[in-house]
Length: 247
Image 1 (cartoon, rainbow, N blue to C red):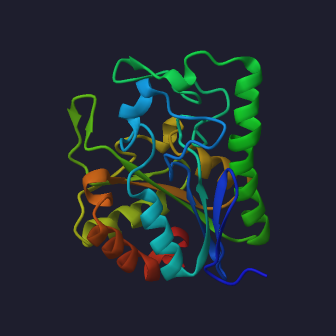
Image 2: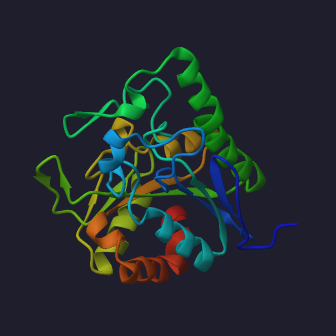
């Protein structure tokens, strides 16, 4: 039997199990790992360690927050370049073809068989793991943790934390105000908008089960710093359920 805080992993998903069933953490871009039989082509080596391959610091914040809250978490164990679990299945970025004007060799020539293999073995495995956790925690709110690059294709981002939402504006405003109070320049639906599908995973599962759901984005010069990872988690943990649900 798994005890609270136990971490297990399979090919697609890392699970953290906790007793607090009021919230589930998810981290769709946690890893830059490319599982066997895939391998990084020499032409794609430059993508490693960048925001293109994963959300830098997101996994560390998720694990630390799960530990402090005592809740469960689901984290991906595959690079978003293999298949992106935070995009709808018909989205043009499900298998990203280019980054910074350069072709991505991993996705240069994808057959129908290969796209199906990745969708079944990784994309669906990830979302089925989230579904199982939510089925076991029937009132849990969903809190998705992401990070973003300070400079996106030449565009400097001044915002430090973004709160992405579609339906749950009241919860988003509470979360924005909280991050502002603890010292971060925070905006709603920046640098991406939850109303344009960029909080897909949280919204998909939230709508399906009528759960409160939000996604946060932390700028990567902040999220990569262990001091900020601990500070954010320590401040957020005792407030998380109240911020999400208002109770």
